Length: 120
Image (cartoon, rainbow, N blue to C red; front, side, top):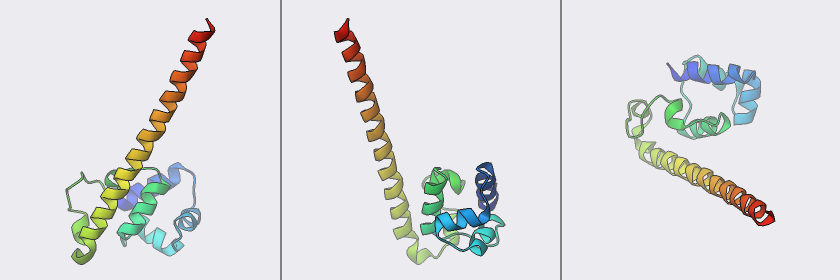
């Protein structure tokens, strides 16, 4: 499945217009439309915005496994290494945030259960 098709499915699955998505991503509607029709590709910085907006892993979004650079190779190679490092950092940071939030939830639940036991 192409990136454009995925973007279109994500947008229509949330009942959003191209204009709404463009506003959220701070891009033009024309740019968003070209991405969805595979006439152009978003820059890697916009891929990060898109993955965050749709709450999806960037590697799933572009249909690649981490380390497989077939999609990335179509970008200017002079900036790719920095962009890949940014993507990996971003993904790592998001995972840490998710784990920390889950730990906090579990600690709160643990305390609730302890309080219930103490009541008995």
